[in-house]
Length: 322
Image 1 (tube, rainbow, N blue to C red):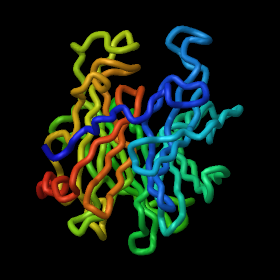
Image 2: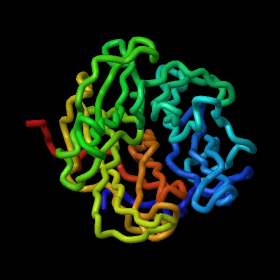
Image 3: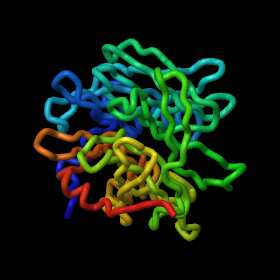
Image 4: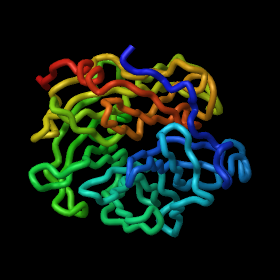
């Protein structure tokens, strides 16, 4: 088996967090100044106003010396709510030339927007860019390519593609503020185990063979009944993996045609807010060649799986779009 779930899973859950918390998931993880930093999504206040509703969402932080045992900060880091914005969530973290770059989603009164921000200390943060609706699941590459910042993203083209036919796209920027050169990376129809949507997951890591990157892939089955807290949850989220060209990262050069991770354990497929969900948000390539993949499970807890980078690259068989 190329990838192994850590025996300590789940590595972070609501019971570990010292402030109000119900669901801890979809975290971004980086290695910064010798320690691991996790920015996690927290949905809280379940059922306080109405059944199956949360009073709020924030982004919390946790720190670790080994990437397995985590200590959450004593209070939330980001909670954005005003007349236009209802919440910020689903953080991803990348270190680019020593600069901490945060990607996140924002629900607004006029649609879902994807944000880019920077921080120097994981306390103050500056928003540099917000996309037009509807776009999210953005991840920034860990280095500039041809002098430009690069990102993967997933727009929501409901009108033109039909509901939930969402794909992975690429854009680049001179300054993290203005994004263009947008190109299709991978369509949902290119992934054999997805029939609903795909999108970016963790920021890529660089290998000699290409940019190794995870993605999420969803299959939908209308015969699925009640799962978790939902009346009817028809979807199943998998983790996929692919290789992108080092110099033209909108080109897929290798693709694993089977899921890297599919919901199998109780905390992924039987328990939690939404069952049958695996959503990677962080990937750390260690000097030893070990890759740590952090993922949300059942939209409820944060988990860890590990593999060797050579094994992951070997899974990505040669690929080119027709």
